[in-house]
Length: 190
Image (cartoon, rainbow, N blue to C red; front, side, top):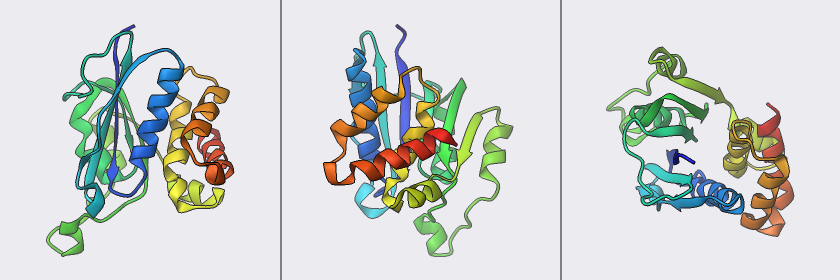
């Protein structure tokens, strides 16, 4: 099998580490060779973060280069737009519509760009944008955005819902399991 490339992007503190761990576990459980990079960026200061997940028969490096990502999974709109050059021509961006102001916007040195979904689509990108934050809140916690996002992502893979739920059970502490299963179901159903 040809190696597939996934980028998980967002802002520090949004749960990208758990999302990459979940995706990695799912793919290993399915028998793939998987490489997951560390989170890169100022994750502890609310800055931009990116994690690479690569899988296939044999994967040598965890890094995804420009124009190679089959999927960009984004927790935040501006981060989706920032990493757009890494998307393959026929790749897909799955993004939450949440907007987190970066420091230049907070200080007044810049303005948050408007209409980012349409701007990304205008480049020819396949964009699936939805309000993952509202789904997470509906499930019981805004911190479940990552799992709501994974629910939406699951629609684009040929793995059973049971396979995804098994990976969630292996990655999420028991006391948060039901909440995260609900967030996953909401993301998958929308």
